[in-house]
Amino acid sequence: MTSTRAPHLVITRPVEQARETQTYFAQHHIDSTVLPVLAIESILDQASVDACLAGLNDCRHVIFISANAAHAGMKQLNAAGLSCANNTIMWAIGEATAKALTGYGVSARVAQGSYNSEALLSDSLLHNVAEQRVLIFRGEGGRQHLAQVLRERGAVVDYCEVYRRVATSPEPGGLRTLIEQQQSLALLLMSVESVDAFERYAINEGVLDTCKALPVLAPGPRIQGALTSRGYQRIVAAERANLDCLCTALKQLIT
Image (cartoon, rainbow, N blue to C red; front, side):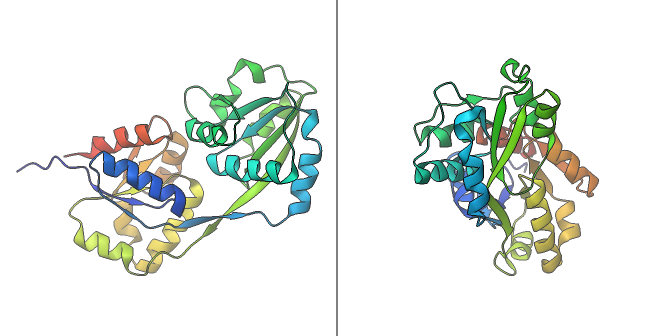
């Protein structure tokens, strides 16, 4: 008999995001288990954050890289009693980031197409930015592409790093047990950092090679490329990094 169920999904996102993701997939009749391999922590270097915020009123563009950046960044602004100037253009990479900002009363322009730096940079309002100041809220580290291109276009760009991702230790034996018990299993890996942390966990569980043969759900071509380079064999890339597109991509694995 042919199965018509999607594989059981292993969600590796930080706990708060993972629970939201799990609830969404449950509403679409997809079972899942949360094994968070990363956690979100606030940046402790408050002096650097304060230095970034001191020039906020001079910024023509303020960009939030992720929902985590939106939450952490807006908490910093609210704690300091600051708000952006009326002529500042607020940007969000993706619907989830825009939704997070809406919770703080901020309306943001959203990148069209894929939810990444490349899509944001294609917006005409970021083409002619010579001598304009840009502040980018993001996590510690990460890609340099957005700032690099904006600087090449003449903008003055600063990063405000307001959170960091740290590796966590899911329940020992949890991944191995899922592999043994579930007839069909798939992994959700949302970033290069989550791939790094997941692989350390899988090595400790003694199942990394097995995991590389499992279907993996990726949020787009960049993560798909990273997974391919590491030897993962069955990668399904979502059109965009939102839950609707991830769910659509996962349903491709129904057999």
